[in-house]
Image 1 (cartoon, protein in one colour):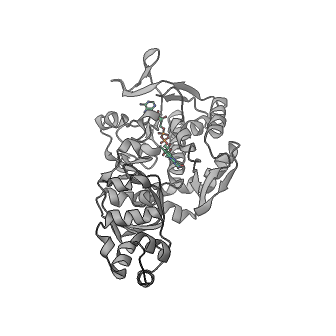
Image 2 (image 1 turned 90 degrees about the vertical axis):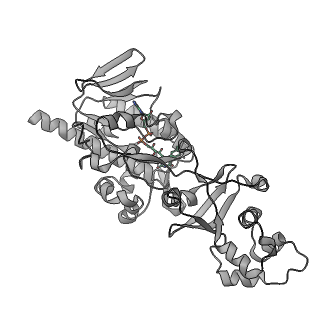
Image 3 (image 1 turned 30 degrees about the horizontal axis):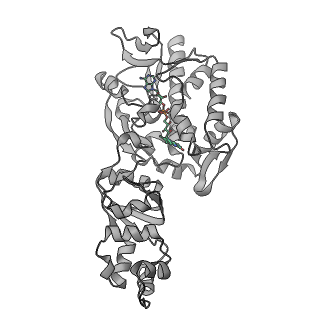
Length: 384
Ligand SMILES: Cc1cc2nc3c(=O)[nH]c(=O)nc-3n(C[C@H](O)[C@H](O)[C@H](O)COP(=O)(O)OP(=O)(O)OC[C@H]3O[C@@H](n4cnc5c(N)ncnc54)[C@H](O)[C@@H]3O)c2cc1C
């Protein structure tokens, strides 16, 4: 996005990518349909960025959900709005969009160099690269770094840039997994439910509640409902589940008080509350002595089931990472105060958001913002 913006402003642009090809994480995001943005009013959309909403606000006003849709259409990708306002390309993958984008970039004169790893700065301030032809240095008039976060390192975003920037005095917030799973020490009885979706469910932690769903995995839990509470869960807040978010506790207890006859607890839960096997297993797992409980205690457990988490799943498995270049280290144009002429954009910046298209939109918006600012810096220098 920054490269395209700079090229459109007439700059000669070289795009250096460490991996053998560009956009590998974009292609991976395409495997789940490529949720580009969310069809929401601007204020609600911006809220998803939590403490960074104010910082990113002007960038998202300049390039928000409507612009993200137009951008995809401009690359020949018709989009549609799915349930809950999530916007996807009709193709439900990233490859046609990426192909069209690369063709447009090349057409605009952007030179793409794959297997060029940026290594930081030489003594004289030149940019250093490791390339297949050996070490190279370049002295660009402006640089936009868009090096990604620190998860899915095999796709290129290994976070190795953090040390380079820290050494130059750019303040960084520590990386933390975001939109990732949390670990649970399941008993063997849970194994047959791995892969099962728990839905509908309301999840509460740290005074926040999110309605959604999640999946039971061998290592723990993951999915939208968990991601939505990620920041508070990361801070150690206890998680409780409401397995019957559409039924009040009193009504739940009343149903459970119906005569049970010789039915097992599982059958009783299924018949009176239409509870599926995975939810029943979760109830038994989290409250091992539930079998002898009366209707009120059972209803209470179903409406506020404590699920002990051991902590986040490994960062490399997270969809995104929080942390990165701190706002304080950048001017409002996203230029690093410690390295004039160097701008930062995308997931490498210290903002965080849930899944839902917020990640991609902010990456595009900040890339465009940095590109425009870098182009302004070039023209100021020329006219000055
Ligand atoms: C499985 C998965 C699904 C996702 N689904 C969605 C989704 O549906 N919607 C959504 O909004 N977001 C989604 N995301 C998140 C989204 O893909 C990222 O937030 C986004 O790609 C970040 O863009 P970026 O340009 O900042 O970084 P990246 O896309 O990570 O790109 C950074 C690039 O910099 C390169 N690089 C790193 N270091 C160097 C170096 N030293 N020199 C040269 N090049 C370097 C990397 O190789 C990489 O190509 C998903 C992520 C994953 C993992």
